[in-house]
Amino acid sequence: MRARPDKTLLVDWVAGAPRLVMHALEGREPGPGEVRYRVHAIGLNRADLAYMQGGHYTATVYPSRICYEAAGVVDAVGDGVADFKVGDRVSAIPFGDHAYCVGAESAITPADYLAEWPPGYSAAEAAATWMQYCTAYFPFKELAPVGRGDTVLVSAASSSAGLGAIQIARLLGATVVASTRTSDKRDFLIRAGANHVVTMSAGGLAEQILTSTGGAGVRVVYDAVGGRFIHEYADAVSADAQIFIYGAVAGDSTIHAPILPLIRKEAVIRLYSLINLARDVAAIRRARLFISLALRARALRPIVDRVFPFEQAAEGFEYMMSGAQRGKIVLLTTLGAEAA
Image (cartoon, rainbow, N blue to C red; front, top):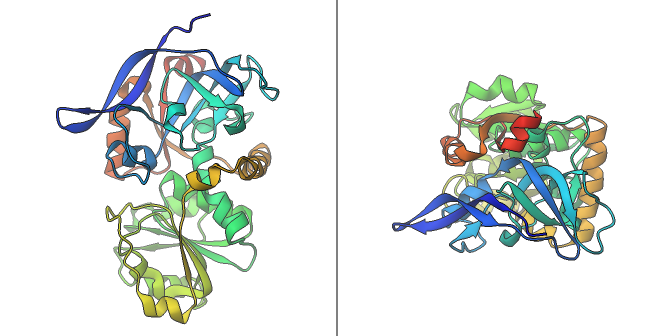
């Protein structure tokens, strides 16, 4: 059976600049190991924005599909798929292959990178789950395991990635210091689970962190900002600290690190990406199991800031660029709106 054309988001080079465009593209049947599903909701990420603008570490190809996260209902499965069937509600786990990007009315994902749409969660929440929680899972659970007695610093904390990190770290028993630009989001971040909030606008970020931690500092840093931001907190890391830099919100693709404070603490800087680890299917299975169990226990719940109709995807990305969001930005397709 030939699949009908579906509205599909593409990033393309138009009139000398990258543009987000929407085309009706002919679908296809799922191949071996693949699952096709009708999309209800699509989660937006800064990685999508960076890819569109040619600023992602994965080279941008024009034209290219876009968006890593979606939730929907299975309508076809390929040969060899045993874990999913037609009618199942699923959500996509990001793994970086743009041939499988999911910003469309219909998507195909390898079964290894699908999870159940968590019971009791909306389509928007299901599409807001896997990037934020998987990205935080590996640093906090496997690479630099945290628990009771540990304190972590989460930067850009009101983003979906920051909020996911707060929830994962707290679930594992750690204390969380959340950093944000101004005090406007302080109460929101406390409600979201942060133990302490420090702000760039108040100045002396390292001093604020040390005060919050009783002078002990932070053992793990989850840094989305990059650039020179490490100078702001370097004096507040503890011995043997591990610093995970996973983004460049500052707009500077170069890391400027103060050497002496980091040597004194024997700190380790790790340039980190979920996409690199996602190539390991066994690692994704471990993350999926941990996060799925936490979702079923209601120990994790994505915070959705704002939902846009699918046709207003450009407005959704413009809102992301403003930095005003407090949580995930999601696009809802016609099917998703009808089912809501």
